[in-house]
Image (cartoon, rainbow, N blue to C red; front, side, top):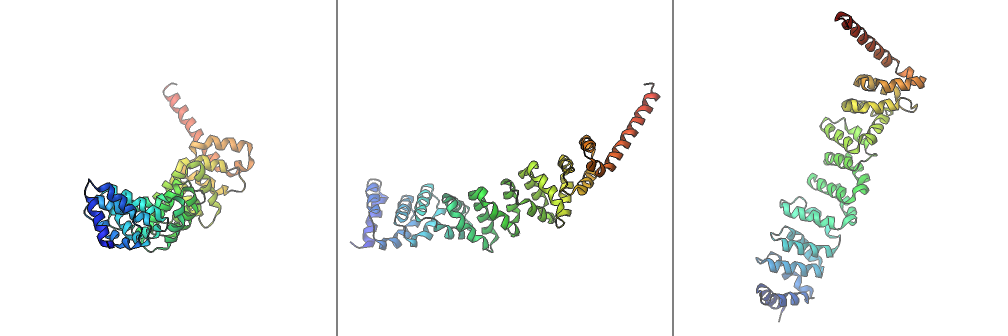
Length: 318
């Protein structure tokens, strides 16, 4: 019996419930590579049981001719078939990743989703393959690849993400990803990107994700960098009163841009932290000198309020 006839006989049994398990066993015993092409054709058979059985067999045989057809079968309409296709592709190892990535812009959303799940299956083994695709000129593929790198690599993806902040096609997604990773090393780069008005809301959101205790001191420290100082000031002013305690805490530190901090405190409004400033000024002569204008204005306001209070008290007989 030739290959075609033998396979036809097995498939005929596979279609009948009474002989199906016998057919599955016979299919498993096939070893000849000559069966690969006709088995590939059967991945498009009308019967899901045939597709399900053939997908498993092709995975077992690990013949590279079947790799692309199996990847395309991740868009199959039947869940059971997809499950066997995924199992079969995993047997090929991470070499399927490069071909899988090419399908990440396929119009079939189910296929794309299953390709991404397949790549995730290989875990950190997949990172080198994904990183190699970051030279792509296709924005759709780039954004899906960087998402996989972030999702799989987690903290280990930080350096890759920071490096790719320069890529305009994926910048916005990378900004948020670095925020979720609470990346400290990304903060100076994020400040530099604040010059792009279209990115400002995302950058502020990333800073929020990183957290005030971590992000705010780094932003203040960046006031020393003349290249990004105006952008750092813009961010501090945009954040507003929440920055005040951190600006005040910087005042006794000699290696910081203390004059810039004082000016920013004045612009935001020192009322909420005036008592903290007074306490520092009492014990630190440099802080007292730096904040003398703020303290004078505060004293003048207090005096004005006291006079008004006294006037109204006497007027109404208090």
